[in-house]
Image (cartoon, rainbow, N blue to C red):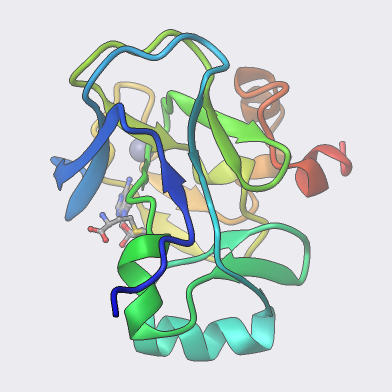
Amino acid sequence: MGSQLLSWRSPKTEVRQSPIHGRGLFAAAAFKKDEIVCVKGGHIITREQLHDVNTRLGPVEIQISDELFIAPVTDDEREGAMLYSNHSCDANLGMRGSIMFVAIRPIAAGEELTHDWCVTDDDTYRVECQCGSPKCRRIVTGKDWQRADLQQQYRGYFSSYLAAKF
Ligand SMILES: C[S@@+](CC[C@H](N)C(=O)[O-])C[C@H]1O[C@@H](n2cnc3c(N)ncnc32)[C@H](O)[C@@H]1O
Ligand SMILES: [Zn+2]
């Protein structure tokens, strides 16, 4: 019995090795601005449950509210729930609602599909970024959503729970 596909990735996407990190999501064909690229599925879990999920499955979640996350919870579910979108400080994906990733500008075939963690995360981490963009912030933090420049750069594309804060 195969694992269920909890997330949806457009048939115009492909997963392959990324220069940013591990595997990444790539456009196999062009996307128009605001076209849906992928949708995150999984179980709705609390921060406490997330700790256990991250220990077993690694980083597999998307934050959808201050205390809630959506993620696979078993090994079997992992592959079908992963979107493989890496972080970029000059991302081409943003959020519509809480789980839907859309193109924030026209995207050409071959481009890596990335989102900026500032549009989904409200957390306490500090991570050294490997995105390689000229706009790279070098250190990405879980509070970047509070930055006025990023609120401007990704205006209209923040996860709903974050957009409600500013
Ligand atoms: C959900 S995974 C993305 C898919 C991942 N590349 C893979 O092969 O499974 C998120 C993880 O990818 C890594 N990552 C993604 N973007 C990154 C970036 N810009 N800089 C450094 N690490 C990144 C981090 O380890 C992060 O926890
Ligand atoms: Zn960066």
